[in-house]
Length: 96
Image 1 (cartoon, helix red, strand yellow):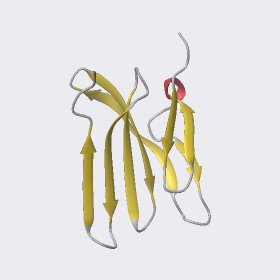
Image 2 (cartoon, one colour):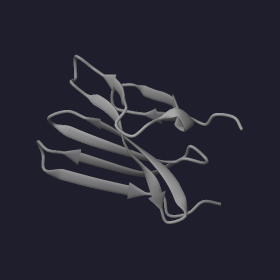
Image 3 (tube, rainbow, N blue to C red):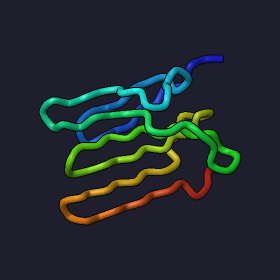
């Protein structure tokens, strides 16, 4: 089995990590300029789909990227902006 890679365009940088080796609680990156910390916050099931959640967070914002562990595809994105009191959720509804 080949390793799946996650490549997500984030506000600050691109994340590339093999999903198979990530562990819950693992810190992937800390940016000293923006104070964003990128962490694996969850590994689990959503229905029949196994997911890996990678979160970028600082005092102002929190971005949650939910990836399908099998395909590596982004299936959900949650963006929370504490400064502007905004909470945005985008979910994958279906694929062809």
